Length: 234
Length: 217
Image 1: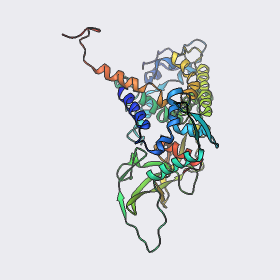
Image 2: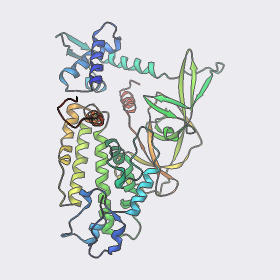
Image 3: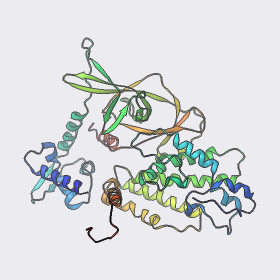
Image 4: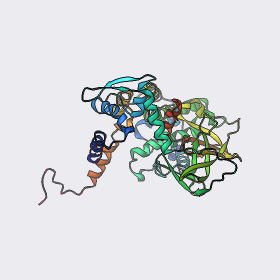
């Protein structure tokens, strides 16, 4: 606890110093408000509270500061583009080299191919052309060169839906989040960049053979991604 | 965990040899005004417990999720950690109870009263699991708080319905205060007591001379 207190004090000192990055500086009034009044929490929540309009807030020294909604949106967009880049479309004559990996960390969580670690390969993911999270297993992880940087792409084998005649007791409690799916997988792989929402899942076989019960394990990263998608930032 | 008394009216005494009770509070029922099978159906048989343990063992989960002990229900494993309880209530127990006791999966020909009562137990567990899910979300809004409260109240009401003589614990009461706190303080991860529990754990491991308040020489 003492360490976290000192870390908080260091963060405050950093924010007040000249070396503070501009993106963080823009968040100072929000952080100050949280520390001083403690009525609202979380930068994301604060951004949400701004709504669609700009807002004037008082900073510690009594000065008034105009918070521009679009400035915040841009700060988040830039931050996300920096940490998770998507690959631009390649021309036919411009081949890129790719490297295979067995593991990759996304949002602080370790994901692996099914051959490396099954428990880190069972995931729920959002395909590029879909809205719902789908269950699947990571078959391959590749990084593709893009200039002097690398972009990671996951190829995931989605699960087939459970047979229609299965009676699902979890249908009564959709908020619980458990779903029944087949133990079999689609033949066609789905490729997604690591910018797409993805999370681990818990699973086990169901009463009837050939069916598994799966539940997505929610994470900060997943919920932040969903928030940014909702607001059209990502 | 304890074995149940063998005086269960119409139920054969030998049946109780295979019965275990998980949690002394909820599963012990006074006999007064209860039918024998109403008392009996809430018990977890040894066979069901073994099945539950088998289910838990077969779960595939990422390593950062702390699994409950393999022999869950046996006194040997000691007290469960808070994280293990969380894993249990978020996935392991609701899914196993759904498989064993929900009306959708009840064996054909089972007594309708038994099916209905067991399904109510399943419903109460699901309400608790859903309440925990809304309450431990990383984002909090009025909607989260409201749904947490609704499910927690539904869980407690079902407990009362299933076990009218139950004595609620202080934790049942305090759980009803969490809803408003969620909107005031935000996601529970920033104000729950796990960091303090961790420090208490560290302090408990310190060697002392058992003379509190005195320095060692």
